[in-house]
Image (cartoon, rainbow over all chains, first blue to last red; front, side):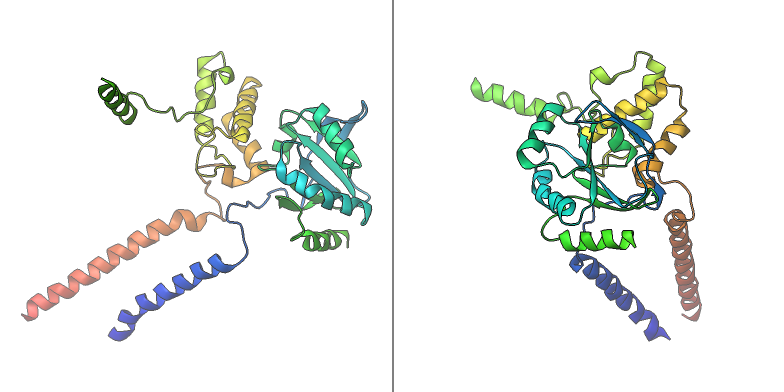
Length: 177
Length: 139
């Protein structure tokens, strides 16, 4: 009995060590936050389109099919890296991507899209970050997968890259099911 | 002379006289009404900056913190209560945005565990004392 009591702190210590070691070696980003919007309806908002003089009204524009919502800006370097993969998603997978131009100069954004190509079906202007706050955005780029019922199913913080492209496509397929 | 000047500058910098202001609220953000401004400051102190994650938005100079500070002031001007503003933020960013986590089922352990540990500690000390008392008797 006494021996057990003496040994138990040592065992406990090694168990805690094991937990920390596990957290250290798994592939995770400790500063990444889960979105509270998962499995909720897309927020209701109105926004001006970057191209043309129309207004985009949510949630009316969602539904029927799976859509992506991508927050981007011309000042954001990872967004530039992500751009080819967004084009791939829209061209090869036929996905509709709604781009939200976050705290950016519309003129620059138009030029940027002209130069690099436009993977977005619609681009909304969010000059004062209000849309970003509605979607709980805290770092660009962020990409949301919205299902055919207008529900947010997944959020990716950070760019879609060569490394996570395949797993992202898998996530889209899961949502499409 | 130069040395003395340098010494004075270093002294000033390291003393409390010339400190870097750790509040990031910019003058153009202030509300006209001081009462409302105070409310905004108090709310900002309780809201986490999600970019830096260990600072309140009152202290952080991250762009998102500034946006949230402006938003909070706009909501105050609109007549929203503190409660409504906190709810608005946690609906979008989760409870993590509140520096003071609310008492909920998911945060039960967080709030109760310190008291459990305290009880265990008292129990262990009590047990230990009893044992040593018994040993004293034997002696």
